[in-house]
Length: 270
Image (cartoon, rainbow, N blue to C red; front, side, top):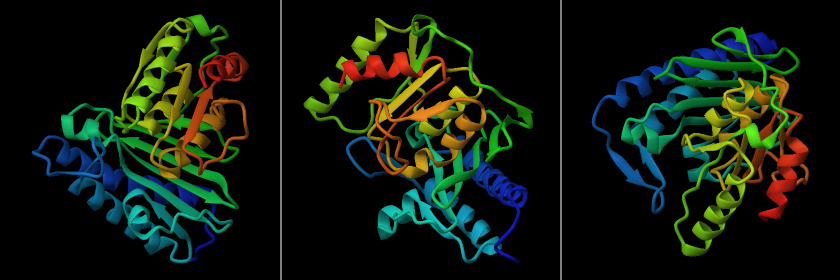
């Protein structure tokens, strides 16, 4: 099969892969899990590995010349250098801790970058059967219906999502909770769903107004979600006002109205 497919073709292939991986996640979700520790609280399961193999095999079959970056393989092989080549960036199971606990915020995230630009984004939550998709320049969709970011203009009426991360040393925990403490006075309420990719999709469809995360796993957490947010009319940026870098472990997202005020508040917590 030719590697240089159309964006629509790339999307269809990615959706197929996500649906197949989603089936494995759905089956495993209701069963006893075999859990390994990557770190103190960072977990990995047999399902993570099975899903990554399935997704990569599916994509490689269609696009043998493309590059691949994945959470489980890259961590092992260290080949996470993002080049201009077409590169599939995959998180086979975002929300592993949720998966282990039977908390239904889990998803497969599949992004394709071409020339380092996110071009295809697919995030699928098989437990809630929500499929978020985007193609560069073509808008963002939830189960085939177009989605838009919220039109909220005031921080004080905004719903904020973040994550506490996986480090449990006192310094990191204090910095993290102090930041949250200060933000709680500026927003309506706070959510921690346990999935970076689904938080970005929450911004894209307007169920969340603000999101930031510092110290997430890697580009596989954001590669698909960044495009989905952008195509839904939202913005993805560095939490402290610098240029956003898909390979740097820090991200913020919101609608365009809230960005300046949000960055201003985040800078005060830096």
